[in-house]
Amino acid sequence: LKDNGDGTYEYTKYPSKDLYLGGITGSVNYIDAETVYATATGDGFVNSSYSHWNTVHPATTGNTVDYSSAHFRIHDYAISLGKTIQHILRRGFLYFDTSGLSGTVSSVNLVTTVHPTWNSGSQLNSQYHLVKSTAASTLSVDSYNDFEGWRAGANAGFNGGTSADDDLTDYTTQQDWKNFDDNDVITTTLNSASINDVSTSPFRIAMLQKADFQNYLGNGNNGSSQGMYLYSTDQTGTSNDPYLSITLRWDTPRIKILSGQTKILSGNTIIK
Image (cartoon, rainbow, N blue to C red; front, top):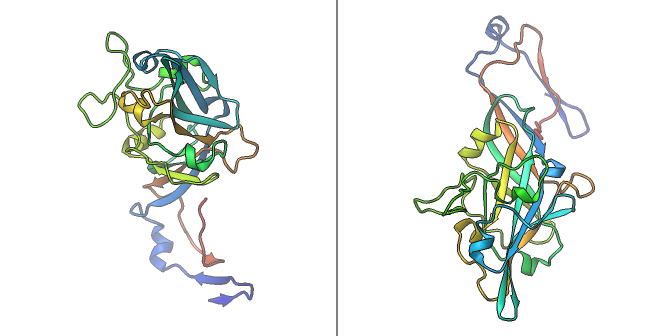
């Protein structure tokens, strides 16, 4: 072990004769990590607004779409208009090109950052669900109902939750995104369904507020709002962009040491 005098060490290890002759066996797994950023035209939100919950929730299209702002919104909003209530739902969408992945996916995390459009006291007053989306790479008003589990017909819409009529493919349990500050980073561990789907590009997520997910009246008649803003890919730079942190595994050897020596030039191995 050699002290390089600059806070690092050089460690020289000479492999055994058996390793020289046989190489690394198939019992050794190799771990790597990938970072995949969201597609600019595929991350954003679709907005729908009607005077009745039973119209806004099962609607087949939205009223407006936004995939070019520096942030996107997910929320349930009720506006009191005299004797009537206007219900507004904003559904968030993320689109990832994962075609460059190789190896076996062993874990998937979604990383997002809170946008300070609303102050932290009012924007984080809700719970969210991440489900499998079917939206195209460019969002449109028609993307409003583009997620697996939406149904047409007399019982149009969907139901989420723990009941037998949960039609959605859930990528998480309910996320209580409440006690964060502006610009906080939120890391959400996705479940085994996402591990299966992320290997088939594209990988798409719809983000639904709790009332939307469970199909109940949400904010009802109180004229209040629950929701949050997250940075989108259109924000300048990439430091706040939504991304997937994916851990990959290879179950067969990718290298074989035939001779020589292995050197570790520092005490740390960083995978990013």
